[in-house]
Image (tube, helix red, strand yellow):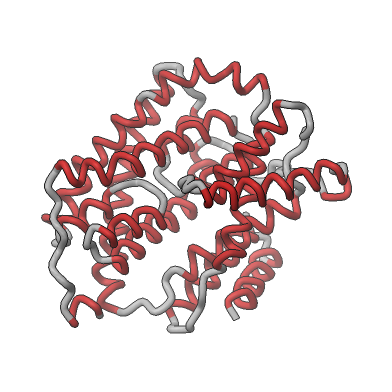
Length: 345
C-alpha cells in the first residue's frame, strides 16, 4: 500500500510538472496519507538498498582529480567540528529548557547526525525513541523540501541537470561492477560495523574501482530516480501512527529547531564562501544539516561539486557518531526515568 501511495504521488507531481517528482511525490503522498492515519511502512531493506545507489554515485565521482582537490577542502572541512559544537551548545539547552525534554532525549535530538544512528544511540542511553525519530524526521523533511527552493531561487541553480545517462548508454560491464560494488560494500560494511554502511560501503568499493580505471560512469538515471523514490517513501512514512500530542510537541519542536539550524548553517556557509573556500552552492550544501543521503542526492541534481559536498557531510556524520556518545558520557547524561503511560502516548 505504501508503494502504491508513493506511486500515485509520483504520477501526480509528474503530470502537474512539479520539480523532483520522484522525490517530492512519494514524500508528500506518504506524509499526507500517514497523517490521515493510514498504517504505512518504511521500505526496510529495499530502502537501504536504494541508498547504495547514492554510495555508488559518489564513489564513481572519486577520480584522481578529486583526490588532488582534498588539500584545498581541508580548511573548510576543519570548520565542521566547530559547527557541530556550536549546534550542541545551542540545541541541547533548547530541547531541554524550552521544549522540556529529558537530558538524554534533548542531547540526541540536538545532534545533527543520521536519523537512525541518533535514534539508536539515544534509545540505548535511555532517551525517548519516538520523539527522537519524529524530531530528526522533521529536520530531514523540512531541509529536503526547502533546500531545492533555496538553491533555485536563492542561488539560481537549475534542478534539471542530467543526473546520469540512461541504462542503455552505460556499458554492461560497468553496470555489473556497480551492482557488485553496491552489494559487497553494503553487506561487507554492515559485517564490520561500518556506520552508514548502505552508503559508505558502496562508496568505498566504487571509489577504488573508479580510481583503478574500471568505472567511468555514474549509476544510470533509472537507478538515481529509484533512489529518490525510496528516500521519499522513507521520509513520508516516518510519520505513520503519529498522534496529535506528538504533532504538537515533537514535530513542532523539530520545526522550531530547524529554524535555529538554518541560522547556524547560514553563518558557517557564509564564512566559507566569503573566505573563498567554497562556491556559494557548495558552501550551502556542505553545511546544510540534512541527511547524508538527501544532501548527496541534491548535490547530484544541481550539478554541484560532489566530492566537496560529500567530504563535509561524511566528516559531520563521523564527528557526531563518534563524538556524541562520548560527549554525552563526559557530560554525565544519565538514563532517563522509565516512560509513563502518558509519555508512551
